[in-house]
Length: 132
Image (tube, rainbow, N blue to C red; front, side, top):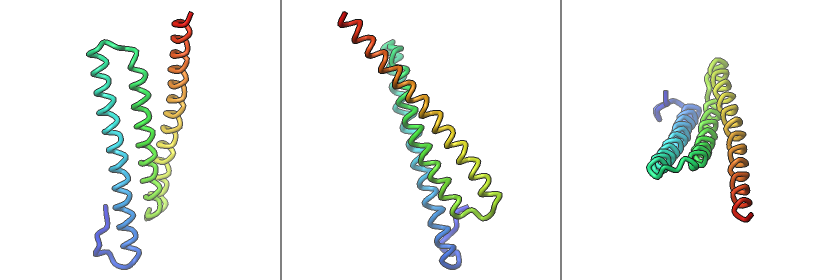
């Protein structure tokens, strides 16, 4: 629940400001995910219409980049939440969420590196076979 300006004292104002900032950061993360899904979905449909299955890996990699950036924003919102967490139970929940998001981001980055390396190898192989 977001605090209102009528909260008493400076602490109440700080809590309210952090809650609004957290909400804004979460919204930015959600918008990034939405934008990535729209772009990837459009490219996917376009590739299907043109019958180009080779583009699917590039589409996955592009969507993964959007997801990774969005996860960073969501993790930032989690950090803000810990600043105003009322008790240990809330901090433990936020910590668990942060660990899960960090792990997701870590494995997503590994997959993106592998996908980029695979794309690079395919391009090199295609260029080598075209030259020979």
